[in-house]
Length: 97
Image 1: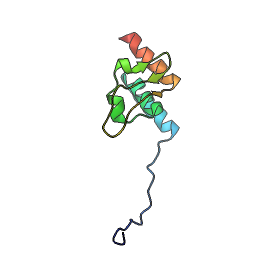
Image 2: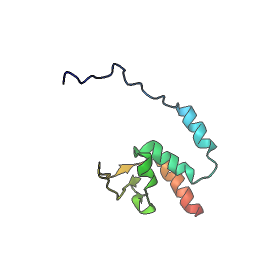
Image 3: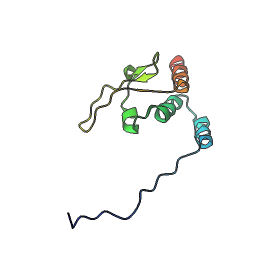
Image 4: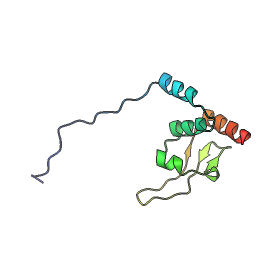
């Protein structure tokens, strides 16, 4: 243990975009199918890899719930919820399909 040393550097938090920056990015999305994906990412708490693995069957629109059916060796994914704006954007994409 005496040979084990911790670095003196403190963790530097990453820069968080402002609400205005996020809104500008969202408004600039050209294809409507990207809007629910952005909002799922912003409101669900899932990692990007978890979001990419979602299927339509994993989305419960009535309860605004994402229920991934995947398990990883390092962790289990259960369920999470998304914001009403994501629900509206997702429903709009479904209506266009």
